[in-house]
Image (cartoon, rainbow, N blue to C red; front, side):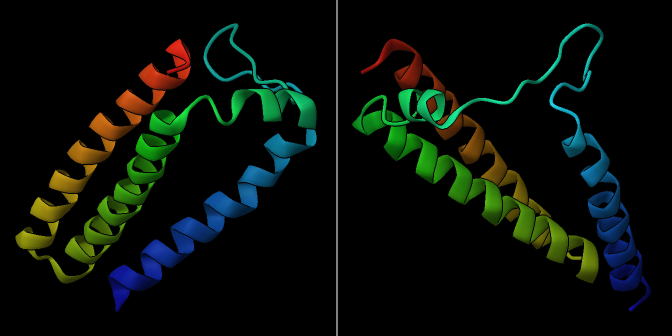
Length: 108
């Protein structure tokens, strides 16, 4: 119960502090790198770079969610089997997201 309460408090603190960064249109991340807002037309031009990019992107994010799920329950229940599944899904998510990037970059 204490672990659940601590993780809930941590997530709440992170969500509360993340709103401050959304206020500015540019916020420094690493050194001189900065994010910038994009328009709807720019967003439409970057989405839909091909069937394979969409396919691998979908499964990459899905497996990333599964990895988060199993890591959370592995921590909550102190169960190494959950951590193994989290590792496995995160590895798959990494591969799928790499392929999504590759196919979207080359427009295949």
